[in-house]
Image (cartoon, rainbow over all chains, first blue to last red; front, side, top):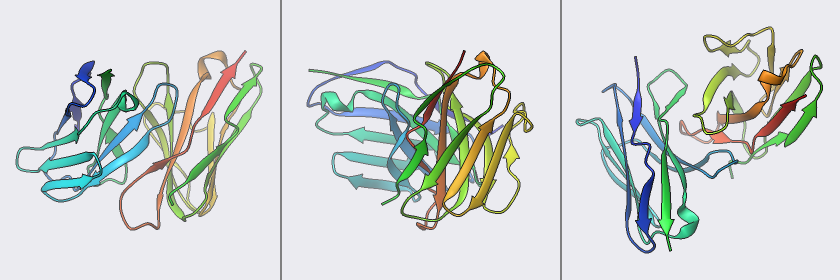
Length: 110
Length: 116
């Protein structure tokens, strides 16, 4: 069974610090990986996609992918209270669908 | 770019009636659309995948006769909840993937359905 695992949290980080969110997945042949942010009562919003090993940066967000270790992470620099949300890791296992983790709830403490 | 809309954003209906939810990709062509359901404090649950012009593929446990999906064009998919019951009350969210070059799915804002 293809699975995506995340620590459900909650993860509390002081404002201005780096928040680190982690995700592992079960299938080595996975090709594409995504991070979504979901505020309470809202739908998910795509933050980052990553397809190749290494780091990908977009503003305060950096996604890191290590296919050998089957691990993808999201770093949020200079965390802001508005970053408080649930972060969903999603993996395309090659069957058109995305498999989502259960999400990590992040709270930024002012 | 990559904007997906849903209509209505919320709906209240009586038990036994049917409700139609529309999902539109506004600035790209969506070759594939997905329908999810999310109960409070729970994960997203994929209900079905639809490709333009084809029958939808439903996930195990989702009743295809109850949740009718039509993907008639590259910018529009509809979900009809037939003979709705209170247990169908949930947050229904569509997503679209298409002509933008990657595997990214872009989500609509969701439709909150309450069945009384």
